[in-house]
Structure formats: structure tokens, C-alpha cells
Image (cartoon, rainbow, N blue to C red; front, side):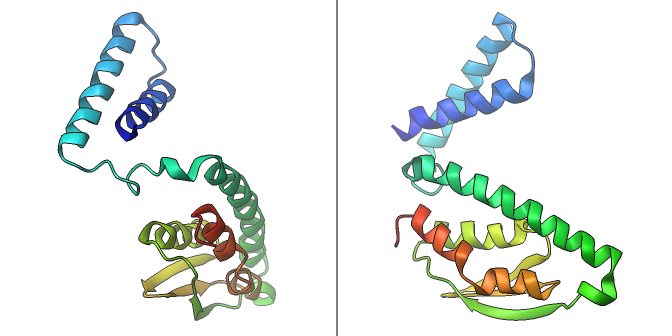
Length: 157
């Protein structure tokens, strides 16, 4: 099942990125996707973390929410650039995380880093060290909303 899912994902990405839809090129694309998936299967790297099909539609809903948060954070960072004395309040703090799996922890840490104005500096045990540019971005992490959403997506709640 995971091998077939990997082939389908690779083909979709390949079709989106290639932009050439002639039969010969599509045939080469399909062949290369199947070859890569078979090599990955033989190397035993197709697992629940490498291809997390178990997340299903929930991860897509999370991405939509994350994109909205990224846009809001961009506005916050723009305020820092335009009015640094008024908005810029950098801080470094530790926050507890509730994810149990390594994949959940990585998704959360990367989500924090993707959100402008915050950077994950370190991830250890059940803690995350975050650098934030503003008080608002620090409160966004400290509130735990993103943490709870990732935990729900991972099915760990």
C-alpha cells in the first residue's frame, strides 16, 4: 500500500513540476517513479514517517490553517521592519510540547520555524527552545494552539 502511495505521490509531483505532457515524457516519468519506489522499497525506507498516509485529510486541513498563520505572522514581521522600536521584542524561551512521536515533534518544530518571526532553536525530550521576534509571536507559541493542532493531526490526543 505504501509503495503504491509513494508511486502516486511521486507521479503527481513529477507531473506538476515537469510541465511537459507528451506520451514519451509521461512514460519516462511513470517509469522513473516506479523505479524510485521499488528502490526505496528494497532499501526499506518506506515507513509511516517517510510516507505518512495515515494522516489523511487532517494534514491538509492543518496546512490550510498553517498558511493563514504564516500570512498573519508575515504582517507581524513587516511591522517589526517598519517600526522596530515599537514592535521588536526578541525573546528566547522553552515551551513544553505534547507530541509523542518523532514525526509529530518534527512537524511541530518545523511549523514553528515556518511561521515568520519564530525559529525553533532546539528540540529535546518534551521541550522546544524557540526564538521569537515579538511578544505576539512568542505568545502564539506559548498558547499551545499549534501544539494541540499537531497533536490532533497525529492522532495522539
